Length: 493
Image 1 (cartoon, rainbow, N blue to C red):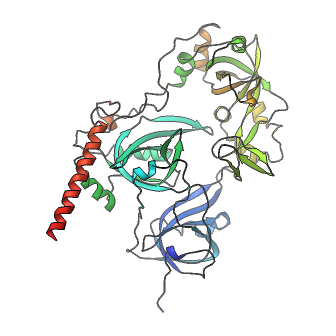
Image 2: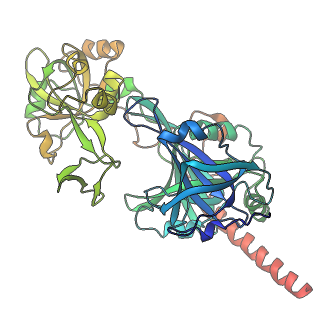
Image 3: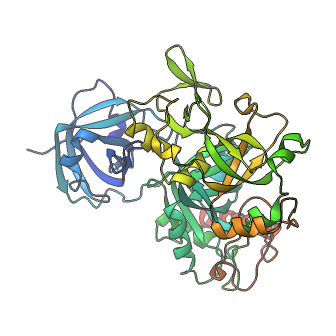
């Protein structure tokens, strides 16, 4: 009996059961934000012979059945699954449905060279730049790397996260792609292998973000894929078409963005004025200021964490649910974040400081979600013992004083960052109580990348070697050549 396989494009909610022949083109595991090490689901993107794609999920209680059986890049026949309407803020396909595996789902590994392994659905940069808000659909794009930022690191949930920005260009324009996490190390490793010239970059499953009036692309951890000069058909053709534009072996990728981010020592010793707590209370200037003080204890009766949206904004109770004013919607996935009020003293005066989520994660090396899940029986007012152990700790505080502060900080001072380094604290104290360090000049933003392989011996700002007008002219020339070639082929036929 010959099996009749259904097309992914025909899969709909309520239709009769079907048999699919698909390839797992992308697979990733979603981990819990609350319980360390717990795996919540296996997520996949499946593709068939026609190039249609659909999102599929294995829930937590079935992971043990399918983990190790499902392998990225392999082809399978698939039957006995449920179909629901697609949902989520990061949908990897535009299919209106989503598949869920069951304990009775039948899976058989097969060989099918006709099914593509990459299945790119490329969107040109002009269409990407036309967005006026965040998109719920992940996109693929291809472009020439016309710029790269310096490397930056920041603290998130007590962990250091790397960040880098690349600029991609095509005949319709250019856009910035913001990369976080492990993909940054992969990019740097791939940049080391370049032989010169501007590389063709393919980005798959990137999130469109509308941030501060401009469109950006951002990677999704463990989902987004990135290739430099890949042997993918679309990339090869694209590279040939724009070969002249990419420059020769001496052409390097220009550096974009501002200069280097200051070190922890520079930030607390040289950049900002020094204040005592008494000075802080009576100053009319806006900060930041650096204050040396000892934590005298937690403020009693105050919440030590708050429920937040994925956008990091505080949620408010509304009709039995949580509502995010920033996203203008009800939120069902709550992310706990620290907001700890402490009494501090410098031996002469005292005050109340509010420690942010980043500052607390840096101090106790534990995520707020972990503490909340560990102390399920404890409300937000009664803090766990690990927070009480902060009493007596001497720190340097980077305090922000802004005239239009959130009401949450009324009567308190917001702490943007803390320093526990003994050497830095000692150097700070040696300057005397009223000593204000000489300020250095730094540009805020993306930091320099100290990797000579990217820029060679020429550190270029704003693309002095390969100017934007040269890039645009090359695109126009390549497009003109392609038109002439097309008309010539038309005459030949």
